[in-house]
Image (cartoon, rainbow, N blue to C red; front, side, top):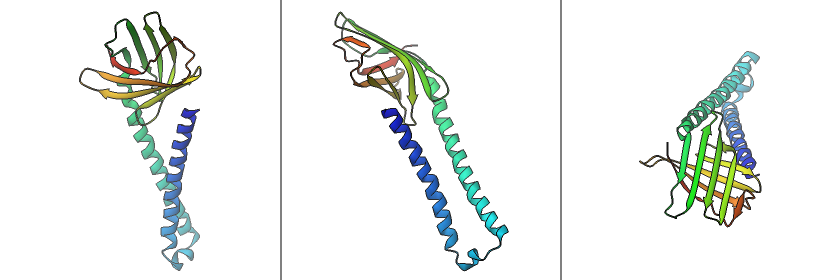
Length: 179
């Protein structure tokens, strides 16, 4: 639900930006006075084409920007291990970027006899290097933090009652790329 809300907000913001550009162009055009009103239909068509060209240009620029942002996510492909000092805790995260703003992931956590958890699915990315998985009663947040000298780091946290966890589990933590 939260992922849909975020996508909806992003779409609405983009639509609002396009509308502001169009309204600004109209206001600027109307400020030119009566001459603009009395112009020929050819001139009006040219003005419309110019506004349409501007809208097309803005859409293309946004697409290029998104492509650049999302194309860089491939560096996160691989296997990650939990950064922890706790004894008896095993955890790994495997990521595979699909080049379509999603990752396939497999994740497990085993902490002695008191915690066992396992999830796999698709992570939906946004432009701020955050990804989300929603299902099984919970939302898992993936924060792609970049390379901190020792390798790429991903921070994981969750909301809700995750049914895929058995026992007393808390799988929030940082994972570092191991391959």
